[in-house]
Image 1: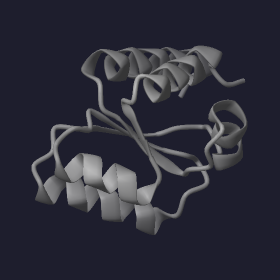
Image 2: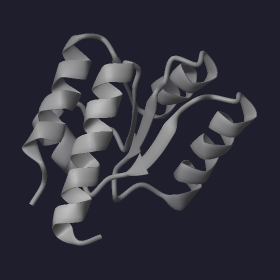
Image 3: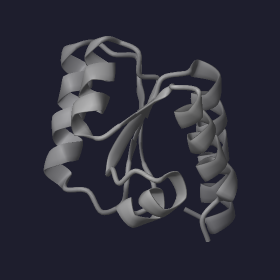
Image 4: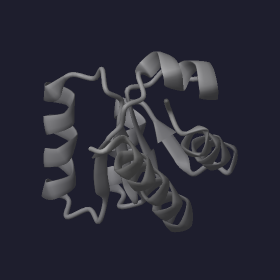
Length: 110
């Protein structure tokens, strides 16, 4: 079961203009050092994950990288935009999402 609070926080970030969705937008946020949290959907390719992690390292971006249990379809249905990767560009929202995802992992025993 997915954590609806995470989806709510992603929606809040999008409405606040603090969510960069899709490869190009996420990469741009990393390069400009706006990104605080880099989220991958569970069904993205390992090549995409590797590419954006290398981009973050190359630009010394201070970004937390997480792979979620959400699929691209889950994100599309909930937020209205189909993307496999996104960055959250607000420190407080990022910290809250990280906290919620870690709580979900501890409940699921991962």
